Amino acid sequence: MTKAVREDRTRRRAGATLADVAAAAGVSTATVSRTLNTPELVTKETLGLVHAAIAETGYIPALTTGSVITNRSRLIAIMVPATPLGLFDSTVRAVAATLEEGGYQALLGIYSRDATREKIVTQILSRRPGGLILIGLPVSPEVRDLLVESRLPIVETWEMPLAPIDMVAGISHHDIGVAVGNFLLRKGYRRPMIFSTDSSRGYVRRYGISRVLMEAGLPEPRSVDHSLPGTVGEGRRSLAAIWEAGERPDVIVCASDWLAQGVLIEAAHRGIRVPDELAVIGFGDFEFARELEPAMTTVRIDGEAIGNQAAQLMLKALGDQRRDRANAPRIDVGFSLVERGST
Image: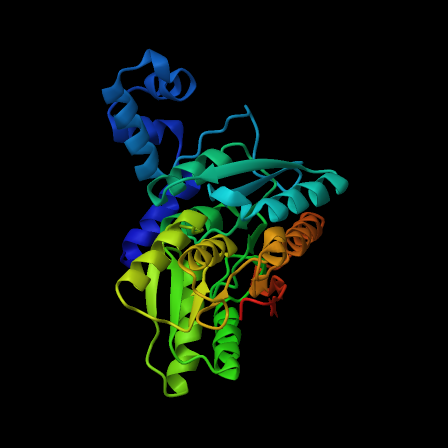
């Protein structure tokens, strides 16, 4: 995107009106209003034209008449991916509880696909929240533009982005990968394999692991990708596939505890001795990890601490009328590698 196009896009988003949408769609303002308020009364063709025009102009419809985006709103929006298995539950609950203690209510927005993310952000901003907390959300350039232009206090979590939008309460996935890589070297593993997930966090951790091992003279470990966050069934099937293909890693590093649990189950089914023949490492340290046999070595992430920090940052920002976004706080909540019987 050229600078001129970006500047033009920013101008449109900053001041787009109902009339701008109507002109772009080639319909009347009444038709635009009807599409937004009673979409069942317009044709699919009109619906498509109006929503395309909204995307083109960057218009954000106000769902509350006369409302404006101000830090006085008592509603704080939370955006979280539709990740199964409760990956972010503790963070969401902590954010909501801490905000409530501070006199604010949480509005939860869930996105399911990259293609719908900008639409969902627009819908959330239309509710005129006082701030926005992003949980485990890699931000696309289009979404970033929307968020910057909203001028809302924003907290990014579960990441330590290189170019934060505003505040951050997260963890460094690269540092986690480096720590796991060094752990593998200390334990003497020389044939590692990574069961990763199709996510930026999984890729960054994999890069950290690979970097450490390759700098130590080992080849880059093979990686098998899975859907986010990786399920027990996927872990079982992936171990079965590589074992039947004759591959014999001495350790498998999994992008989630669920994947690792699946590996442990399949290993037991096949009579593979853990950790003597195959070691297993997870990610998350969920309650079941310590109850398995053998108990799982994993990376512990304190999701509740991330949520509390994020909400506290938001509450402080809402009370600071002279806040400078350029000097916004960036907190690394950290992690710990918990060694148990699977390694």
